[in-house]
Image (cartoon, rainbow over all chains, first blue to last red; front, side, top):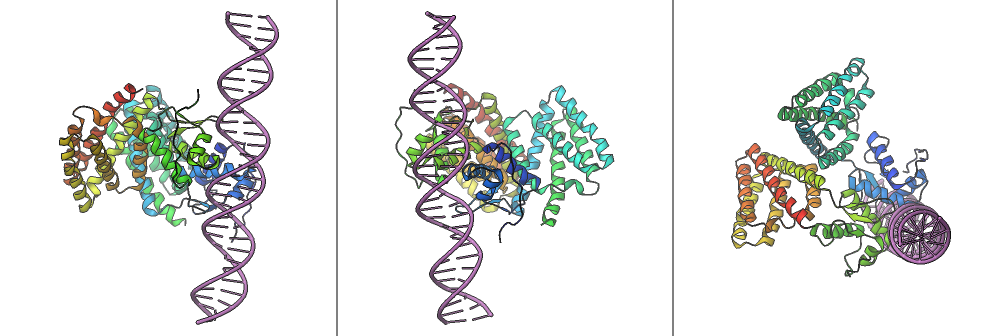
Amino acid sequence: MKQVRRREVIRTGTTVEQMVRAIADMIVTGAILPGEKLDEISLASRFEVSRTPVREALRELGAMGLVGREPNRSAVVTNVTETHLHSMFEAMAELEGICARLSAERMTVDERRALELEHRGSMRLVHAGAEEDYAAHNTEFHTRLYRGAHNDHVFEMVTQTRARLAPFRRAQFRLPGRLARSYEEHDQIVTAIIRADAVAAGQAAYSHVAIVSDASAVFATAGE
Amino acid sequence: MKQVRRREVIRTGTTVEQMVRAIADMIVTGAILPGEKLDEISLASRFEVSRTPVREALRELGAMGLVGREPNRSAVVTNVTETHLHSMFEAMAELEGICARLSAERMTVDERRALELEHRGSMRLVHAGAEEDYAAHNTEFHTRLYRGAHNDHVFEMVTQTRARLAPFRRAQFRLPGRLARSYEEHDQIVTAIIRADAVAAGQAAYSHVAIVSDASAVFATAGE
DNA sequence: AGGACGCCATCTGTATGCAAGTTGTAAGGA
DNA sequence: TCCTTACAACTTGCATACAGATGGCGTCCT
């Protein structure tokens, strides 16, 4: 059976980098679902380029782990096994813990203040139950943690891991009461960082992610 | 000035994956040095293929972080800054710590036994001062730690990080007394893992790598 | 003599064509 | 009826050709 679903043509600037980002976004945002095939010709026509740059984009996405590639087979949006998913969430928790710990030690005064402001500002989103907006805030909040660690390589790893987990985490804030609990957990992290309590920050961040992982694992399997 | 140095033709099987591995090996083993340009035409003739698969291989290496790519420029073996190098070593220490900690918790009896055997067997290499052989043992030893963590994603991250650090770590066992000290540090890690003492294993592994990092940083800069 | 402009060589980026491999399907036989 | 097998359509892998960009070098002007 063919992919009958019609896709609109995408007119970015058609450089390979932009295609990579565009396809990655589609995967991360769920416009393309895990397991779905990405054949080169369709993508080429969607982006209005030839197959050559598409192939390069797919290979890059493969190296990033977002799509799987086998010889003479279409690229496929990676459909990770449950154990691999678990390993990614666990790794994510470890990485977040590292970032929070290092942030507690290394953040500048300005960074600490900015983090706290960002965090406090999200309280009204919790009260309003604005899931979408809170999700955006959440991304920003965590990105600040990653940057605050002042370690480029850790930043790279955590960013990539987050990208690969994104497809499985989409519905996390739909869980009843998750917003409020998330805020609480952020609060512990922020407090520890302001205090420069590295151990507490690391632990708080670790469990924050670990909790989300449990919740999302349920959703990921339920959504299939 | 042209790259006058003659390179022999490489006759692998000429699939892109093999080219990626071959080029990655050259970078990791130092056959190609950081900062060196990798122009597509030369590589194509060396591998006896056209530019197309070479381009894909280079893009993949770029995604892996082994080479840098800018628009309309040759790929360049990544010449990391000192701070980035430091960040990678720090990340490596964190990852090793995680692996050792998880290994202490999760290794099977067989894995623990194999690790210990591998370790004990290396003692004679220390006494013989066999740097090359000890380096091979060292790789094997650490790989066992990575596998023992039973976490695919962590394994992936630590493996990739190690690959990117390899060019800067080549001479590490040339330092006087380093072999014996390395053995001692391995011993602490093994002991902790056998005891299933996660915290001790993590700390021992962390400092083991952190120490190596200091030593190698010296060498990396001295080698320029 | 020094600097600026422009041309040329060279390399990267993309398109297209062809060969090889894979998958789905249909026909034939057990 | 079900399984096997062969063929056909389609998709990927690679090579080649062409277009666009960049950097170096020489020339010309000041």
